[in-house]
Length: 538
Ligand SMILES: *Cc1c(COP(=O)(O)O)cnc(C)c1O
Image (cartoon, rainbow, N blue to C red):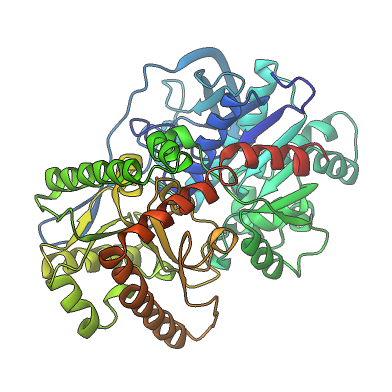
């Protein structure tokens, strides 16, 4: 254990531990899971606080009319240990008992999960569905995570130096820290100042509407104010109360999750007075979870034959996986494009289909084949239309376009191992980081991406992957979509396709460069070091 390092309590709504544990929805959970695993590998003193979701995030399937529908199961995790600790949180005037479970396979970084599904509770469903239901339920979940989380740490007797809120969901933990100090005699202002010194915050969402807010009335009704007055609440998060604004004001330092995202976040929140500085700490991944070691060693040894053979093994495994799931047999000799993203409009999953005069022949002649995956949020009708649209394309091009339903860690792993290229075409600068591209890069799957998220930091165009769009940004959606789709066709038809089919040597050289240029910097070790030196130890 690194005994001289501060002890960190890491708060997050979701953790992606492995496929069998449905306690994650997407990138935020993947980051948190990789973070805890990294803390274990490198002996960082940390404790994770989360919720034990009974059903977790939606399983999302496609029905016979090509529509996306959600399905929930109750999951049991027998491997969790009962700590014997229970804490109470008053929600909507009712006492809610939160039982504390322990996942103790992460060495120096034990993960504690709170659970309200107990016979003594009326409100058993608070820890039912991750991001399920509406505003009140979300607040109740966040009260369990934040207020319950701090009380759990106290009951467990764990001393903490730094409280890290990964996304604004954990903000109510800050209210509990304030309350503790006010209970011991401090004024509100003094309690805020002192609590700030213990809190750091990571912001993720570069879309204003994606940053959760609630009316003050609703917070008061739920009891989320935790003893604070209306004026005190407004002084932290405004009215309506914005969770991100509150966290920015209640932390000593904040960070965005890539360097470009730092610029974006600072612009977004420039008018928030009294907020902490937002620095940039670029996300990273846990290599043992996501990366084929044989690819790394082949790249290190400059063994081109091994690199290609191992890649073909991964590609064939993906092709078999797709066949088992969807009954489509893809061609191992044809360029295979992987694309999996949450179904949100700014990610433009159908950008490639913009001009059918260009894309039709490529797909029909078997020059390119695409495997899509991705879920829409259960309450997001627009997202579901995006999924349906992709399913329609898979019907239109049955041999070359595939949609894998119910995106999860298994699909994420298969796709970032076995694709030839990893396509990413968000409207810049709306992709905060994009860790799937790092997984791909380290497996020798070449990124072909808009210069957004992490990619501007890694891209050497034509050497370790490709960029397109030249970093152009515009609020004019029609303009930027047209601009970027043209750029995508240009890079595909003039660079990617010719290199893949006619210059295999260069392709393999690029695979090697992709692996060697990313494997250290975008590994979780660098990220942990930066969090400790730039956020926790300051
Ligand atoms: C890696 C991963 C993500 C996050 O990747 P993005 O690039 O942010 O989309 C989300 N979901 C799954 C299942 C993953 O494996």
